[in-house]
Image (cartoon, rainbow, N blue to C red; front, top):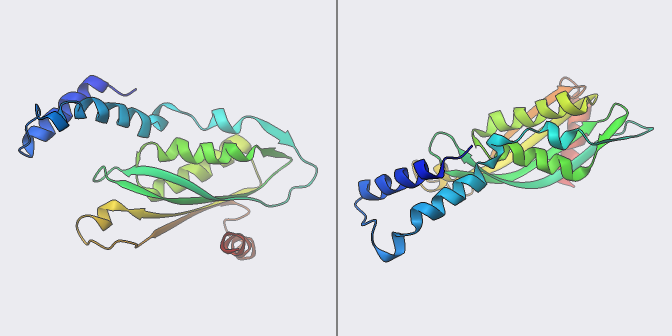
Length: 185
């Protein structure tokens, strides 16, 4: 649960720490705005992916499903700066599929936390395995990190790609390549 009062106090201290006047017209409401923003962008901390992955539908054939180009925004836990990009989620059902929007909602649950990309990728895959129980899942996340763009090495446009493969995808290069091909098409 987000404590808005603590966030407001921290923002005031931060503004003072960088030499700003917290009573300046443009900054007077900034602590309140930032508190509301953090409630929104860190809202996944209070969510459980099970809520989204529990509504399933029976299927006769267990054929590969891919939801690609799921746009997400997250905050790096190291610098509290944004990283954003696309997630691609593939799975092979075991008699049950989930509504496609539920895959995007699952990505959001984990993206809306202070996070590192590698961990988020694995959490998405693990949640799908745990709550949907498919034969296997593969999650590929590609993102640009503002901590690499705005500060430090300053390399805008560089992307980080992380992959998590579970179940039948884990050691099956043919299945993995099929997913890569589908993502590129």
